Amino acid sequence: MRDLAGGFGYLWAGQRWVFRNGRWLGFGLLPGLVSLVLYAGALVGLGYGADDLTAWATPFADGWGSPWLGLFRGFLTALVFALGLFVAVITFTAVTLLIGQPFYESLSEQVDRSVGGDAPESGLPLMTELWISARDSVKVLVRVLLYGILLFALGFIPVIGQTVVPAIGFCVSGFFLTEELTAVALQRREVEFKDRLALLRGRRAMALGFGVPLVLVFLLPLVAVFLMPGAVAGATLMVRDLRGEDEGAGAGEDTGAPYADRPGPYVPPQQQGQAAGPYQAGYPQQQSPYPPQQPNPYAQQPYAQPQPGPYAQPQQSPYPPQYPAGGYGAPQP
Image (cartoon, rainbow, N blue to C red; front, side):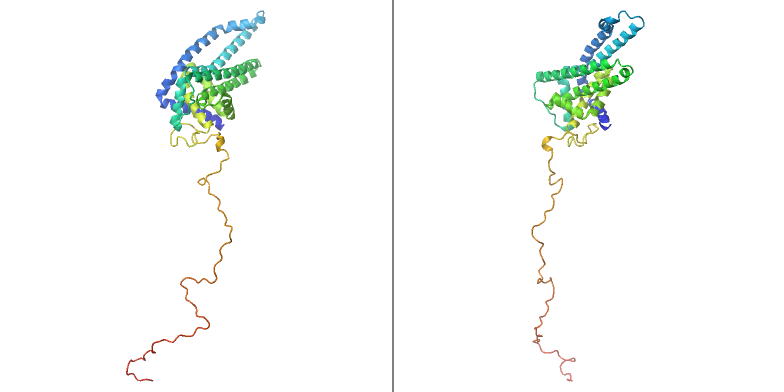
């Protein structure tokens, strides 16, 4: 549950960062608006042609009587549109990121600088980055279509197909949507597609906490456009946590990230198993190989009075005895 809430926290932190830096909000809206126009036209066309598509795909039902023909094809039409909407939600992010690659990469770099002071760069030409992004988006799309076909078939199961299957579909969409958004920051760190999936699977709850709310709000096209820049910013903050880059970075800054002060689970290989330095844990006291020094029995204590020996003779005073009382002329006893 902590990771699930943490994923949503990073989504919220990204929106806060963008709205605190309004210039980047307007900068990141342009690619989303272009994608919105393209997808709106595609969904409208699907809505008008879904009936003809289901009629063409089910010729065996032409002889069915009313109301079974209408119910059956109406149900299939709804499933086709839902599948199209499902694919649109996933591919909207990929297409928007592909259109706005320079925009969102600059935004992600700025988030890194504001938090840690250093923004990793891939150093690749723009066309190479676009090719890598398109190639990885196709890989995501293939996986999404495979899941979509499976969920479409499971949708015919009574009750489960109308309750459990849509919930699983939202989770699948949320996971791959998170992968697409974190790819902006991870590609700059030269993390390959396979490693990105492994990184997110290791914190699956955090990925779902970040992606599933986005899937739900991305069902509203205008909301998706306005939340896209903040989603990229939040994904960058989450990448820093997943890779443990927030440890010791940006001290004293209010980044808005819920776990910015907690080191992430990733520990670089060169730091694994290192012993603590002398200032982290004191060195153990070593025992001397020599026996402890014994006191000298003949040593005299400081300021001690010398003791007379057994053969010492009393010394005679060189001076005459003391004069008697009374002084000179006093009668002697």
